[in-house]
Image 1 (cartoon, rainbow, N blue to C red):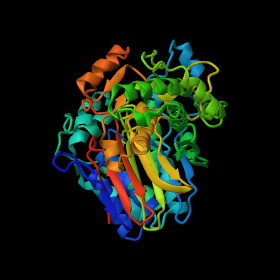
Image 2: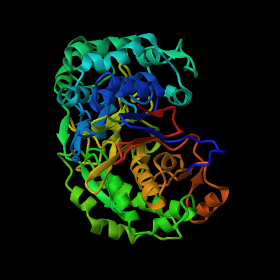
Image 3: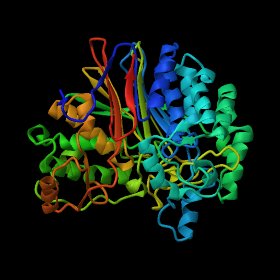
Length: 525
């Protein structure tokens, strides 16, 4: 139990349904949908799409999503890959011929096709109850009438606004200036797009005038994107990957997402007695950072489009984790893993919903970098993601950029399962940090007995890439000790990631947590 004399927040308890996400309006809309007779899929879609209006620097209809779904009355988990592919005209050889060694992070080459809308339409048709017209109505309302900019959103908007270019500056600035907290942001162009999706389904987005707007805008910027590329976007159902950490099964979305990285990291940490360490001490932070370096290095070598990856079994094998764990020096830091495009990527959005029938949804939805590529369509203001920056240009690499291929993706929804029962949908936002964040959250629960809210309130460190970022929640003595071990220690300007989770109790009670690093909350009824 937390100290009620100190700042903090309690976990949220409810019996009938719950949502946890990064913005209060989205959480409320999700609960409204549940109370109107919708299920967890309806509520998650409604909240997620609204988050594209509440947090446009993080996500939007020009982005991708991944979903883990536990159906009502069952304990199996279904994965849905809503990530888009590269346009057929993309060529790694062409980029290498221009002298490039990496996909330009916010260049037109990085703009992959938006996969989230197709996934939302498929989810609604296959698993929802209310239909897209009712589910999208809240986001349409707020896109038309506006949303007051929240404090954390305003902070991020100011950091990310420099990436906005051309038409995007018209749609995502207010009279040429960055919105401040309390100012109202409207997106009437997106409201019109959502109305078309509500009435026409995916055809309202991937065909007709909306698709023509996106293609014309991209081609004018030098993109190879075509109407055929957009018409061919399709999500895929697939099978999750999982691993066990001290009796708790960590269920992750399979590649092209980086969920396997979290499983490998957990497998490595399983060789150390983390529970005997100070949860906010230098020893734990050091071992976690070293294990993460090794896990991320494996990620960079092996993870790719599911049709191209060949070493997934090796990455998840217990022997691989054992060999990597043996490389860790308990007193000295090793060099960091090679940073790829997402090393300085800031964040994304995550939403989880559990309904009265205990259907559970874990959904993550992103445009990659802040405002993605920084480009937007000329007519409707659809912000394009830059997920193609996750490709490699190394010839022959499994993740080598190619037309029609999905890039390695950073966003990963998670679930926990114990004794065959799904006990918690959860997610940890924060770009590259996400696999590390999943395992830190899991370890806080398992090794230290923390509750849902306490496990996400606890201070974070991240040392896999680009030095050792240590939040202010750690003591100066811990930072000094980490520096002595050889880590390049710094305090990040912004907090490390964000998280949301819902514990599904056996007593009929749901327990929700929401990260104070964000503006959001958990709400139940």
